[in-house]
Amino acid sequence: SVAPRYLINPRSDSLLPRMHLQRAREARWPDGEDQLDSCIEQIESMPEPRLRALVRNVRSQHTPVDLGTLKAFDLILADPPWTYTENEADPTRTLDQHYPTMTLEDIKRLQPPAADDAVLLLWATSPLLRQQLEVVAEWGFTYKTCAVWVKDRAGMGYWFRQQHEFLLLGTRGQPGTPEPAQRPSSVMEAPRGEHSSKPDDIYRTIESMFPHLTRRLEMFARRQREGWLVWGNDAEVQE
Image 1 (cartoon, one colour):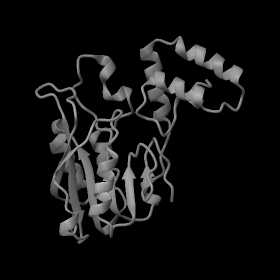
Image 2 (spheres, helix red, strand yellow; image 1 turned 90 degrees about the vertical axis):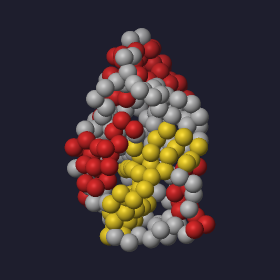
Image 3 (cartoon, one colour; image 1 turned 45 degrees about the vertical axis):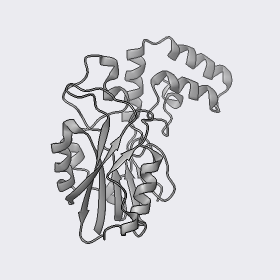
Image 4 (tube, one colour; image 1 turned 90 degrees about the horizontal axis):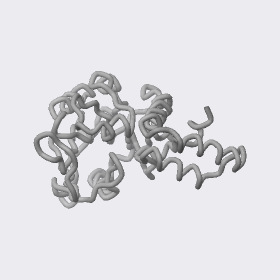
């Protein structure tokens, strides 16, 4: 029962389960090293599928702040945990083993608190592109354009091995377009990081495009970032 206290680091959602044990060893343990060692021994003896299930269960019990209680934002970046109807044959490589996923309808119901003039940037993938465009509209934005993040190596895929993600851009009202000197290429190349993490360079690009949009929200954030309010199971909102 004490395992959830150190298995899950809310800033380390992309770690594989065994890596959480190493983080636990490196962290301070308020009840003493002997208790920590005993707990780690119990966890290390678990079969991998059971350990992954425990990690998913603990993550799913964390409830983020109600979006409806937050003030409106003029720049929103979102990376929802999409549910895929098909997975690779290897059951150890499914998304649910990295983080709890959400249904399309649940994602649509989120309704992020957007200002009258606002920009939405939504991470999207090839298999769910149609549904992800639906989310842009359901959240009250009009789709305008997209960028593509090209990764340094290919991943999985039933037809093509995927090596890119889309960053959909939608607007509501009149948030203004970037100045000509601040309009980047629509193709952004950067290495893949830990599962689902996004390159820091892309954040800097977004910030330089919209310096006038200063109230920024990142939904489903993996970690804190200066200048952004973060929301999701893996990071607490800092109002």
